[in-house]
Amino acid sequence: RVVVPGRCYRYEATDPTHEWHFYQIEGLAVDRGITLADLKGTLYEFARRIFGSERKVRFRCDYFPFVEPGVDMSIDCFLCDGVGCRVCQDTGWIEIMGAGMVHPQVLENVGYDPNIYTGFAFGMGPERVAMLKYGIEDIRLFYANDLRFLRQFA
Image 1 (cartoon, helix red, strand yellow):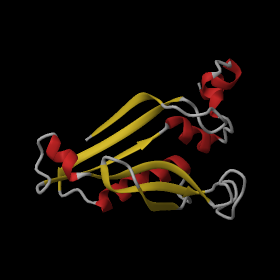
Image 2 (cartoon, one colour):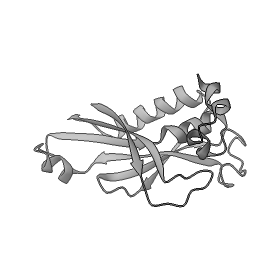
Image 3 (spheres, one colour):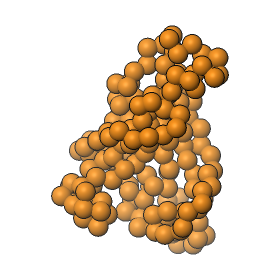
Image 4 (cartoon, helix red, strand yellow):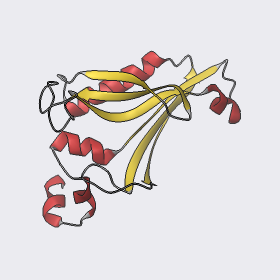
């Protein structure tokens, strides 16, 4: 089991919710008998501890190249309680991370027998989680070096 933070770069236009560079925290658990239920339980508990026990969590199928099946995890919108608003783009849900079961070929490529070992992986941006938790509307504030903004988290 490992949790690894790191800086990421991508070719993307900058706007209030997207930045060309950001941090990502990736998690990986590999062992005998790890299931999708383990992944869901781990991420569900994470969401409840970060966003509160009243939060609802949703998993939907999604594609990520190193996992199968892949899922995106969303929480119900804390601003509108799932009714629909500007923050959740009228869906009632806010995606917070991607995850999935480690693809058997990935396990095999690193010398693990996928018939014996399974695992799950997830990736999330701490800026995105902080934006949701503290109601920050523009990701660019994290990188603007404005001490008035940054000091509120000290």
